[in-house]
Amino acid sequence: MGSDGWTEVARRAGMTPAEVAALVVLLLGAVSLTVVVWWNGTDRSPGPGQAPIAIVGAGDAGSTTAPADRTSGQDAGADDPPAPGSDPTATVVVDVAGLVLRPGLVELPAGSRVADALVAAGGAVDPADTSVLNLARILVDGEQVVVTDGTAPPPVAAGPGGGPDGPTLLADGRLDLNAATVEDLQSLPGVGPVTAERIVARRDELGGFSDVVQLLEVSGIGPARFADLESRVGV
Image (spheres, rainbow, N blue to C red):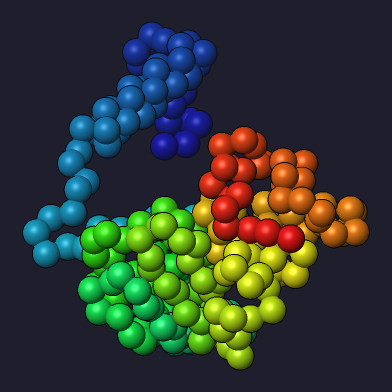
């Protein structure tokens, strides 16, 4: 309807043009409100057989990677091969002798300890005394582990090419403190790698031990520990 038509309507209704304009604005507002109420009250969930509409954010634009693919990508390193230089199949062979159920050769994974060798040999039998052994010591391929009754010092664990009568033993079978290596010292009860290295370091400082009582000068060896070692070592 043109402006002349609205003027004619206003004249017949006895309304001024300003009143007509206000009425039009009011009608448009009412229509807009009706549309909003209808839109909010309408159920727009997908009906049977209809797929929901996926809303893709700007960050996902152009991405076609499925969630399953992303998950598999995160787990791709789960079965990575071992680091170079590590050999999970390496083994050591040691001779377990003395008071065990099955004396003889046993094959164990590299890095196994004296305790593992005893288990592989069936365990100690009476009257064995395993307290004289360092059960936590890591085994060396080709060595011998001897289980005794504790009345005499056990032979020093011998590595490849060595033996119980090696140069680290005195004539009476005691370990020679002035010739023993760090590995030899770890065969003593209660002596681990750190204490063994401290014994060697103190020996170097003194230019050699003159008496076994000098072990008390080594950090980590107190009267109780020394009492366990005194009959097993000499100079």
